Image (cartoon, rainbow, N blue to C red; front, side, top):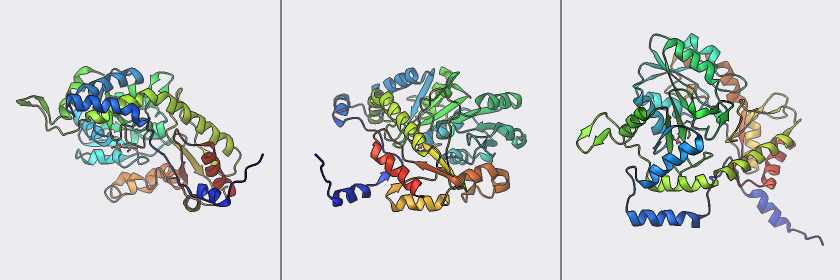
Length: 381
Ligand SMILES: Cc1ncc(COP(=O)(O)O)c(C=O)c1O
């Protein structure tokens, strides 16, 4: 028996918006017991029981030693720089979300932009040395799209020049290389648990650190610098994660493997469907052993029938909201573009990538029909 679907229903389905991502939300009823516990205890924040449980659970899940939760990834970046008392100039990438460089300005630091590697679009270690000056104290690379930076090469430079390394690992939840968690590299790594991230706590973030002493300093900094009722050791900030966010994180962790598996499947489906489309390049992974498929970036080359921006507009006309992560480059924003390192000639690889990239929708509940709809926009050209 064939069932004919009214054309109005088909048209409405086509009209439904597909966003670049959708937050992963476990069933609401599973969250209610956590809320009841909070209502019962009346502990809403200040590193309460859920906060402590989530810190331990994330250390276990991520395979790291010490982790401090914060209210969001941006405050975590700002606090990480404070924790290591970074001063002067910091080498970083222009190809990232603007919070990476903003965290430097919030600390009165000077960002020095260095171009990216054409394969991973992460900070190119081969170009770092030339940007080091007597004022350089640290490097802040980003594991862009969750693809690992060349951590060995970066560490070697840092060791040679006595620099600290703070990874902006906002995209890299759960990513592993052959050597284990990518979050275990550098002096500190910073995660974001924003609603759009692979693992979210509505808003949230964390700093991964190698020793208990550094974690203690971060814990002081995120609580106004308080050590006890009468002792303040630093001009800290209010960067604490609330109990409600921490409780939600504990629930999310119960579903994370399923969510990551769904992402893996969508990633593989896109790659299969887009194979051989002239001018469309799916970015390969960065050598990770376990990827998190946080994003699905494609590069629109001259061999494609439309420019990147024409394809972006065409997606919008078809109610598919793709994003140009990362365009504009951070170095093109008004508060950065006057810096000598922000000159486009200095950043040719990043500039080219920013002109070609589109991030396609990817999220655990994405249906095969929606993947087909995205791909068909590309194939129609
Ligand atoms: C690379 C990068 N760094 C930092 C952040 C800031 O994190 P948050 O939104 O949790 O403050 C984000 C995302 O939001 C990001 O993508």
